Each structure stands twice: as structure tokens, then as C-alpha cells.
Image (cartoon, rainbow, N blue to C red):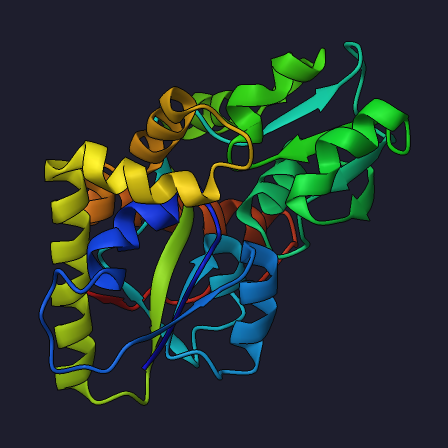
Length: 268
């Protein structure tokens, strides 16, 4: 079984126990690590058995994958942000985005009516803003908490945009499993995923030690802060509020003509 996830501290944190063999299973699991937009695009080919996936991308992949109730990345009080060298009006500006299928990009399209999207890898965006290649940049992952170290300012907080309109947590990423995998194997992987997350939450320092491999220059304190921001009670088992939030996001996007709302199929 090919299990794909990102080279980010939060994914490393939640997958640590699984990767290190601390969770016993009859499944033969092979791990593949790529950035989230690469995984989104690979999922369109249906070759990944299990993968991290942007909630946005699921709208186009419901025929191939089911959502797992464990492993979601959910913002609650935080989320993607748009930064620039100075405060500005964003309508009509050139904004770097971390991939067309990322949930952050969908949120930006919900928040703005007109902007020039410049697609690039998430870890190039801060430098592109600093060099003036773009007017502003949409940040995901650790950039949300390190941007001020680069003398950039937050122009738009997409968590605030979302929460003011919905009052719900912000679902950004999910783990999905291929529909054609036998049901018993789907349930077994879900068990392993949940146990790996539980192990990380109960052994934070040990899991952070492993996540430091993907620190990208962050201090241990920041790695721990970022990992525990996005690996939490929502990650262990998706509550009804997160399901409602995904429904709401797709409703809003369909109303604005951005996509066709998918039917959510979640394995609990």
C-alpha cells in the first residue's frame, strides 16, 4: 500500500509512529513524500492508495477516493494568510499561490473577486514576495508563523475571513483512500492512522524529534508549535463540525461558480 504525505512537520509528527513501526499491522505500507500540490496532482491519476489531499482537490476526485475520518488538517484560530512587503488592496494584484488545487487557493478565490494568480511551490513564495516578483503571497504551512521574520506584513487572514462567515473550524487537508481498496483494508489503515496520531499526541517530544527532519530551518520550539497546531483532536477523529465546514466550503464555492459540489464520503 503506497501511503503519500508531505515533507512538513505536522505530517511527519502524525505519521511518526506508523513510519517507525510502532503500530503493528498486516498491511505492507510504503511511504511516499511530496509537497501537497504534487500529491493533489498525483491523486488525479489514482495511483496513490492513500494520500494527503487538499480539501479543495477532493471536489474533483470523489469518484476515486473516500475521505478518512483521521488525519485531517484543520485550522481553529489560524489558517492560510496573504503577506506582502506593505499593506495593500489585493484586488487585481499578482499573488503567488502554492498550487491551484490547494484549499488556500480556493479560500482566496472566495475572498477576492479578481487577482492574477502566479503558481509556484509553497516554499518559494516568501522569497518571491521579498524580491518583488509578485505583489503578495499566499502562505501555507510554517510560513503562517514565520513571515514576520522576513519583514513581511499580513494583508489578509483567511481564517478570519472564513470564521466571520461560517463560525466553523477551517478544514484544509484530509487523508483519502482509494475506493477500490477492499473495505477491510480501508478500515485497517484507518485504525493504524488513528493509533499513529494518538501516539504522537501522547508522546509529543518523541514525535517532534522525528518532525525536526522536516524543520526547514525552524527552531524546535516552532516545529512543536506548528505540528501541534495542525495535529489535534480534529485530526484524531473528524467531528461533525468539520464535516459541516467542508459542506459549507463547497456550497460557497459552487455558489460563486468555482466548482461543482461533491458528495462527501467519509470512512469512520
